[in-house]
Length: 636
Image 1 (cartoon, rainbow, N blue to C red):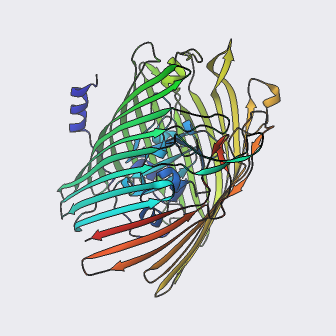
Image 2 (image 1 turned 120 degrees about the vertical axis):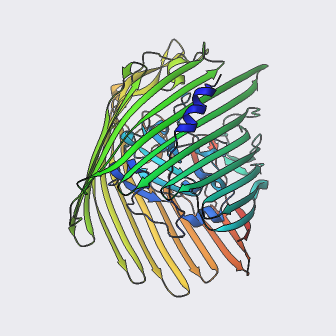
Image 3 (image 1 turned 60 degrees about the vertical axis):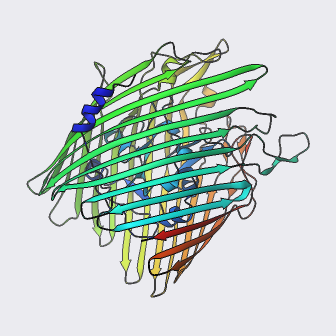
């Protein structure tokens, strides 16, 4: 049972606000920014942070977050075809090393140790930021490779508005969304409803057959529904309360691989996200508090060979947090606070209900000199699991102005990840958990240059970053008498280069932008079960990844072209077999019709315009050329 009364008290007394407005801007800003949360503002200000283009949100509201992020060169996404499962990784790390934060709350599931971004609809999101590099001192367990920050915002004094949007595309894919909002001087409330569905019955070339043949994907239908509510209340000149609620129910059939036929498996995902936050700010002193409850239910069914395999997994997380912000000597900004995270896992593959409770203590500081040429930041986080201290995490960073428009920055951090409940306690005929597992730990270093010059009609931006990330006690499955069990026996080193370029130009009636982000990643084994695997690239981690975007707008007409490139990926640990590199092209054209009290947005998208044959995971085909039509009716 949920500790309902405890949570109710925490929810009543513990609140925190993101306190940020939507930026009315259609630019894709590949630049260093200050995130509005106080902790990242103090300790992660020198991190590489990317904003995801807002036009991609508005014109593709029927997509999932994983589909939008797939065009970025800053991260790697692995999906099992078009199923409702997608994992993401930064800088050569794994999915469990990526923290997904929803309004500041870490969505890591205690059972699996990761987050599934394929189940996050774009329609429910106002903003996405990608923070590259280790940040466990900010986000806690799992933030070894990077952070995906997904935010919902409260806008005051905007009046009433309605948005009705519909999408229809290839393979009978569709979505229908309704958004109603009321925004007054001191009250903001918004309701969103979403319905989605797709047959996913696309044709593909099956190269695993003795003679390659074109087949149609079967057992691939998926559909979902969701409800979201965001509220904001100004209770004084210096105080704000926000509340958020989101419910989703998604069903997806699991199609056959290229090597198998007649799959009948399916999975149902149900989730609840509830949070409230409070902020008080006066002069240089501030208090923030918040609490959240997150419930995920996963039901997997697979009738095979007369058996009915059923996996029923429930995870619950309760988070409460409070922090204080103040200035010292008008130059040093201090943030300090406490966090409590309670996790529970229930499944028919555990012997009993599994629980754990973590208490965290964190402090960060930021210093900037009078000339603003030097910026220094640091943070530290200590966590207590039960009565045992976890590895202390910390970060130190700095930014120095070399000449006008050119800065040098550097960041060093210590990070960690707790083993998941599945790692520790799973029991079936093929796998056995290991309750003696240690936490994974990481040590990250990075340095780079930033050149940013604004001109009258636009901006030019360039960044270059080199990084090195070492992960110890990495958990891998080891077979023992045909039963797999996780062990802490691998060390990995991920190092590489990242570069980003953006150029924008604005005229009276038109706007043009080009941006690209490229990464080179060598993520190799330093120590593992076999000497033959030492020095080998980790599976499904591409050495090269590039994401490019070009945008042009003339009056009410627009066009966006994205071109992501993914290098070859090995899918065997000895690097003897690989999936070939591929390049995709996606184009979206749009037209706005504006009237006195309402407007209509229409967009037509063609994805994979070159009909490229590719796979993100071995034996799971991806669709060829396909289209999507989006129509939105907006009343202000």
